[in-house]
Amino acid sequence: MPKQVVPERARRRRRPTRQGSVLSETLIVHTALRVLREHGSTGLTARRLGTALGADPSTLYRYFAGMDDLTRAIGEELMGRALDDWTATGDWQADLRALGLAIHSSYLAHPQAAVLTASRVTGRPREIAVDEAILGVLRDAGFPDATAVRVYHAFIDASLAFAALDAGSLALTDEARATDEEMWNSTYATLPADTHPHIAATARLLAARMTHSAYPVVLDTLLNDAAARLTAAAAARLTTARSPGPARTGANRRA
Amino acid sequence: MPKQVVPERARRRRRPTRQGSVLSETLIVHTALRVLREHGSTGLTARRLGTALGADPSTLYRYFAGMDDLTRAIGEELMGRALDDWTATGDWQADLRALGLAIHSSYLAHPQAAVLTASRVTGRPREIAVDEAILGVLRDAGFPDATAVRVYHAFIDASLAFAALDAGSLALTDEARATDEEMWNSTYATLPADTHPHIAATARLLAARMTHSAYPVVLDTLLNDAAARLTAAAAARLTTARSPGPARTGANRRA
DNA sequence: GGTCTTATGCCAACAGGGTTGACCTTAGCC
DNA sequence: GGCTAAGGTCAACCCTGTTGGCATAAGACC
Image (cartoon, rainbow over all chains, first blue to last red; front, side, top):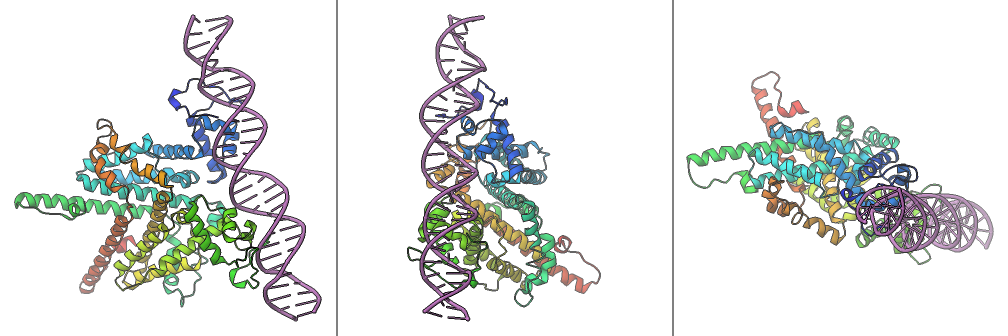
């Protein structure tokens, strides 16, 4: 049993397993994603992953400190894929919208993995790269630092929170998800109007809307709010330039 | 072993356990919350809960179909507590703000339970009551049905998503949480400015903000946006009344 | 090319998890 | 007061993550 895990870049000997596969961190993470897809969010076990790799389960501990460490590596992979799918255009609002949607869909592409990792902060390189990118877009757009950090915080936490929430329903088995979605047509749609007048009155609208993610709506609301603060601050600067004296904008007060 | 669980209201015989306690669904849920608080989010096990109740672990299967079913019951309890802590005043924006914060803090009061349940839709009575209350506040405030449903969707999903996300960090062990929070002072604060200029420039602000929840900021942004749509729609109605003809407001277009 | 070191894969075992089937006891109905 | 079956208990099943000891071959060195 390994006293400590050898970091990937320091590995020299690559000894094939009995079944012939040559292991590596990336191979393990990719295989883990496949196992998660095939067996669900609770189906990633050391033994099963070992079998999928053609290796003994305990071998995993030569690469990761434990299943928890492996989980963080999977999260890091998903965040990296989101960043790879994204390119900045210079329009800050469009760029952040695209990045938010990229993060969201990267996680939803592997919902079973997202459930495990979306609420974890890994502190690994590619996650840090995403943070740097977001802050860069905001500061380059002209947001003062305090406001940029405020917008960044709401943006990243909302994106991860919705990724986790939406992945949760996607990660259900097909029948369970069908049951859940049917609930808006069965349970909620059949509530009597005398006990639940408001649900009864809006049942059709609820059934149509609740099966989709609220993330795009929330994301656009956040970004529009930020844009309004940015133009307000710019206008305030113009005013201040003409008539001297301290003028505190809404954005500045917050920040 | 029970073929099927007897629903709580159909229970007649209440036979005390060997150690004298008389079981019920509510006693089990309350005890589960205590066990979660004492042993953490991974510390709720059938055996431990059995011990805490003074009963054999397998007895739980007389009351719940499995640990998963018990988890949903715990979520229902937390949602119910949020509703109990809330009273409507008639000011829709203040009421929704209070309800959102009540939901958030109800879950955060039992973070270990929240992690397990916040991303699950139970469809149980008290959760439905919360939905009815939200829709009632919005429709009574004058929101057209389509907009009310839209706002409701963003509101409830954001509240649950952030409850789960924030509970996730609170549910960590004390040392793990301390490590996570220190990351903003260690990892992020020490990144060199030439590779990560934007993080380096805002490191102090990040450390100050990222250890708090972004939920209040997001909640207020959502509610302010809804308020703006409401007044815009009202103004549009006035205009329409004077000069006939179809006038499409932003809110109506969305809805 | 031969030798040595040790990284790395494998095996067996442990404690603890959810869940189940069979059994027993007693509460509540007739 | 007797009967029935609800509900509590027991023992066992197979699963999980994890670890210590061991064997083997990869690559460094001469």
